[in-house]
Amino acid sequence: MAEGEGVRQRGWIGRFAAVAAGALLAACSTVVPPGVERAPPPVQRPAYQAPQVEVGIPRDTARNRVALLVPLTGGNAGVGQSIANATQLAMLDTNTTQVRVTNYDTATGAAAAARRAIDDGAQLILGPLLADDARQVGPIAHAAGVPVLSFSNDTGVAGGGTYVMGYVPAQSIERVVDYARARGVTTFAGMVPNGLYGERASTAFLRAVEAGGGQVLSLQTYSRTPAAIAAAAARVGAKAPYGAVLIADAGPTAAAAAAGAKRGSPSARVLGTELWNTESGIAARPQLAGAWFASVSDGLYRQFAAKYRGRFGAGPYRLSSLGYDAVLLTVRIARDWPIGARFPEARLRDTDGFAGLDGAFRFGRDGVAERALEVQEIRGGQAVVVSPAPSGFGR
Image (tube, rainbow, N blue to C red):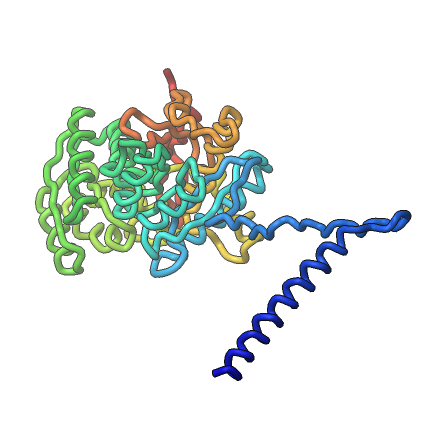
């Protein structure tokens, strides 16, 4: 026990000695002999701060941000990329420094693309292309106060801040029927496909003929099979004679139906819709010789197509002009659009309208683009303008 106690005492004494020595050294360090310079205090370095990384694409404080929503992958990637290329050309041609356009792929989800665009600061959305996508994007954009200029031709998506820039069939049907009436046609027949497009085409056709004092002798619907098309054409032909027959469908269907529909009226004119203008080979179909159809003008588009081909090495899709014209509209309004402010949506309803590759257009109260259309006739393997589009809108 005594030995153990001695060990404990020595340990305590050792610890005390160490503490005392430390205190003595500390006391001695405070004494600075005369003439000896005091050591500088340690440098206090600021605490490290990690850089702030912003989620999404960088904010742009010098330009207003615009989103382009089109399919860039999947089955519609060709037309979507063509529209995106057209917007790029429009940006270069206008040399604007007030607008920045960013592309978002709707093929991976239109709603998600709209949310990303809005989170990135977009104050205007150009697109989407498809009506179903526009139905998803519209409410999301409306909740954020962001207008949408859709490239769809479905008037059902218009309203609530969504505007329709696509070529609406009702307008082309009304224009070509008016042209036929002005050339003495009083009796009409028609063929329309089953589905929403056919329903709207038939309504527009009946209204246009009735408004012009004409008469529809037969209006037949069909499913898009060769047998159904031939049967509908035969039913229409049985109601002959008539002066003109509307075939509200694409060129191949119209060509297949034309002979049967004109069987009892060989001198009748075939009437087409805006769908024909999106087909480069429509004029080469001999079954449609002499046919009339109304569409946007192709004059400026041909110049655009040549420039597009020179830059991108391939021809554009006809719908790409919608993207070009949407940028022209945006740049024009951007003159009165302060950087960082909301897009001045009221300017979209300017009564004088806008001008672009596709001619004059303006948005009505329903949010649908009213277009100045020309009438073309298929003649000698070419589409010849027989009634030019108006250059603007009268008050």
